[in-house]
Length: 252
Image: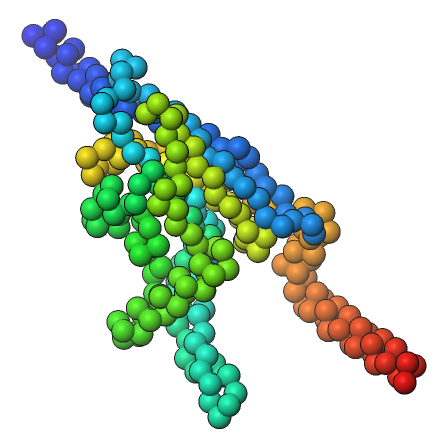
């Protein structure tokens, strides 16, 4: 009876050991944005540990997601009225990632079904943007499509259906581009191991992207002393405008 109880207690541990595991890493745990920052390349890599070190005939696939930080956003829609482009409508989202990129060893829709993709937010069409509510479904879908299109053109949202390379069924790596206008904050790099349409292992790492030097001082000043920062910005604009006008008068 004791042996049976011991084996029963060890069953979860033995079961866990029979599943593959992920050992992920990142080329940089923090990225500093300076005045000369033009973007960066982030390398996400790691290894797949199979039970007993035996690689199956059909190795598992890998999906990597880099996301963050989440923030509320107001999307405005412009229309041309009387020959002038004006804000005609708007819609608010309670939360939307400032950056999102997914890379996979094959197109996501070939690896998992729609339900699994929605649960883990594997793809732009499965992002949970949390609309503010109160708008008609058609309007919400239109603004969601507009937000996705805008951030794709800005390089803030991206999909790489063949962006993960797997060597010998064990080692994987993916490169994700970080644009110069990327928002600062804490990012999560999630790695998913997929086999037969199911996520069988997952691992997460965090990355800090922040400003340094003069840019950091400006950001802190704007956040802590908003009124004084705004006043200084207005005065600086007036001085620059006056100086430009004075130079123009001298040349004429």
